[in-house]
Image (cartoon, rainbow, N blue to C red; front, side, top):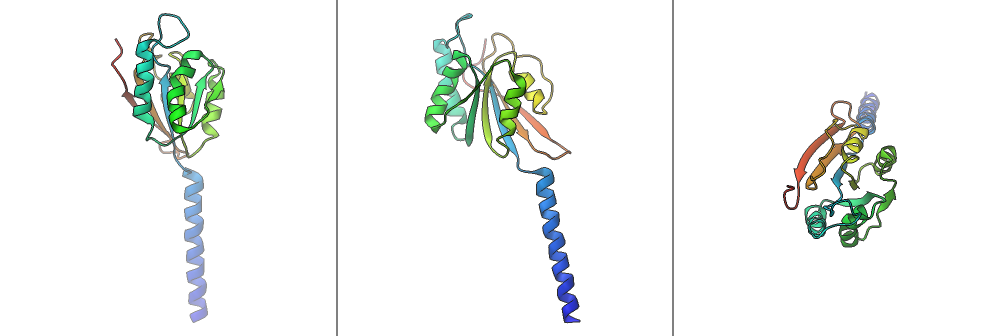
Length: 174
């Protein structure tokens, strides 16, 4: 009788362990993706304006305590300049991708499951990257908008695989 009771307890413990593992496997760990457009630039120049340099500093203030473990940015100079202050503050080397390759951005983010990642793109790539990661389809960012900060929480749970929060940082865009 005592032996049978131990067998039942062992079986129950094993089922609980299997259930916990299955839950973890199914839902996995959550990833957080911070997405911004490069900071302000002068006209069509591929470099930041003074307002853009100020916004890049505001990005450091807004994100340096968020646990960013990787910075993924486009190959444009303005994206490099936007990322540089935060990368230096965190001791990170940004991952540089072709700015038009939405799928490459999504692949790089997915490689870092369970981490917080900052993505720096462009007005015509940030919202498509959000959609490629399973977030909602959003309108393209306007040409004069530089203050959007999107926070995308990703998880493998089928109930709610991606949750998006739309914030703003730095000075308001005109």
